[in-house]
Length: 74
Image 1 (cartoon, rainbow, N blue to C red):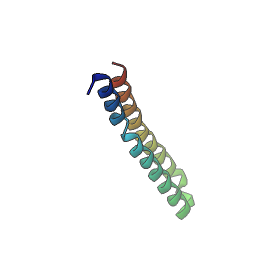
Image 2: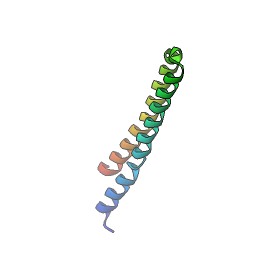
Image 3: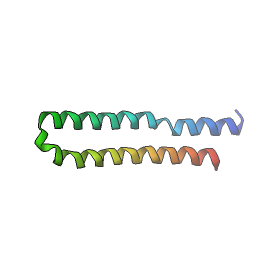
Image 4: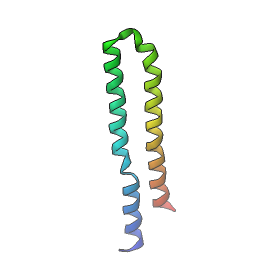
């Protein structure tokens, strides 16, 4: 295998966790909707925690994307 194709393969494998990140954000939002539907008064307490969960999950996506781009271009 030549080095250029190995770089492309490594970058694709580094970007693979992005699918899990999408699933994780979907789970967080689904649980937020469920919690607010069960108890609308708790929406003000639950929403900031959901935003924090989404932000932390998105940080994993940014790190995976950064690693993939570093492998590809360096």
